[in-house]
Structures are given as C-alpha cells and as structure tokens.
Image (tube, rainbow, N blue to C red):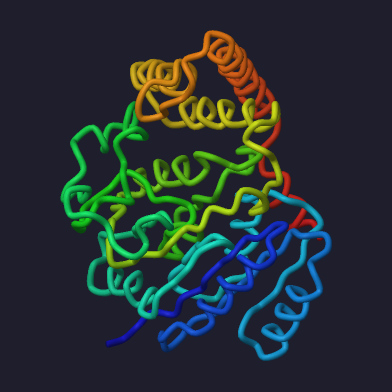
Length: 325
C-alpha cells in the first residue's frame, strides 16, 4: 500500500510525565514515513523531560520547536507551517497510543478523495480496557449533524461504527494538507484559554470546502486528561476559565451558525452549563446557577467584543508574529 507521508503535531504546555509517555509511544509507531513536531510553549521543563526532548531531537525522532507564548490554535498553525506531510495528525500531549494508530488514520485518505478529515475515537481511561456492550452506540442520532445542537449529541467515546460526523475532537484528528494550503482554512487564534470549540469552528469551516469529516473508531487513543497544562494553565474553577468557556462557544456560533441555529445553541448552552441539566449534571444550587449565569452573559458580551475588534484586525496574532520573524 502507498502510505501517505504524515506529520504528527503535538502542541504542549507545562506537561511533564504525560508528555514523556505520549512521545515514547508516538515515536514507536509502525508507520513507514512520518515525522513528529513538538510545538513546546513551556518556559522551563523538569530535567527528565528536558533530557528526553533533547535526546529525541538529537536522534531525529522529533522536531522540537520552543515558543515563548501559549495558544493552542496558534500552536497548531505554527506546526502546520513547518510540517512536510500530506496528512496532518493532531494529538494532545497527554494521550496513550496503540501500535497501528497512524495507519488507522491514514487508510481513510487512501482512494477516498471525498474525505478531508478523520475524527478518531477518544477513550476515557475508565473504559480504556474495555467498554460494556450496552454502552456502545452504533450510529449517532440525526441531531449530531445539526450545528445548533450537535455538541450535545456527538459522542466519539461510545460510538463504534464508521460514519460521517460534524466535527472531530482536538486530541485525535487528522486532515489533508490542502485544507490549509489550497482552501486557506486555518485555526482561529481568537479562541482563548483552553481553546474549547476551536476544533469545532475549524471543522465547520471545512464543510464549506466540500470535504467530508469521517469518524473511524479504529483510529483510537486514550485521552488521560491531565488537570493542568496542555496549551493553557487555567483551573476550571477560575473566573478566567469560565468566561473563556462561554466566549468560545458564542464566538463559534457567531462565525458559523444561522440566526436560528445561534438561538438554539444559546438555549442548550444555558440549559446545560448554567442550569446544570443533562448531559452536564451540574449543581442545582441557586447560588451556583446565578454565578454560572453571570459567566454566561459575560462570555456573550466578551464574544461581541471579539467580533467588533475583528472588524479591524485579522485575529491571528501568533501567525502574524511568526510570519514577521
């Protein structure tokens, strides 16, 4: 089989043991032609991590790029501009991989020109060793293809059948290179903090190219979900995290959804994240609901501010800085 050249991009920030495990498993993949790009935004690593990165870079197992800023979409764009592969694979810096992972992604692009992106399956550590049969979902419901409410129906953990999907999860996804080079679709660096919904925004814009996004349950990894690090260092309990969480949802909606879809997303976002109804299952305490309501409206106003500012800026500060350097 004529396997395409793959570039694996791993943005990282303030991760240590989890990053070392991820790197140890990605550099041992049984794939004939691939490169690993580590986009490192960590100011100072632990000595063991620093030594591992230096050793892998010296052995040309990885290409190691060190930056003095932290942005997940910015790091993704930075890596793509330096990648040499026909297929771009993104993984997080806290995942566990099995042999055959890259082949599972790559085979979807061979002789299937309609597929522009592959969404891999993402397992929680609690079901990494096996999932009860009754928890399996063969095909996602029709609501999972509706951009106004899909975010509450897309389950790439329990789905077990290949199928077309609306979006991928950022810790396990791959794309044809020409999405960036030919169609000019890049990650939006206005998504902040944990960058929640940045991959959703990107995938919604891919649909405008005519490409399909395909879910392959065999392109599977385990997302450990380290509580800190990644490309952010913000506690989920912090004011900054809460505002950014809502800002990013509203910004995605402003950019991509119709008025009706926007209103439906606002309603579901409020019902789930503010009121705490399923599938969020948050506290029903009136005090906590009121606090979440403040964050909700604050995030909405913040997203309006981003939209206004975007009238005179391109909103890609890290790309602009990179291209100027």
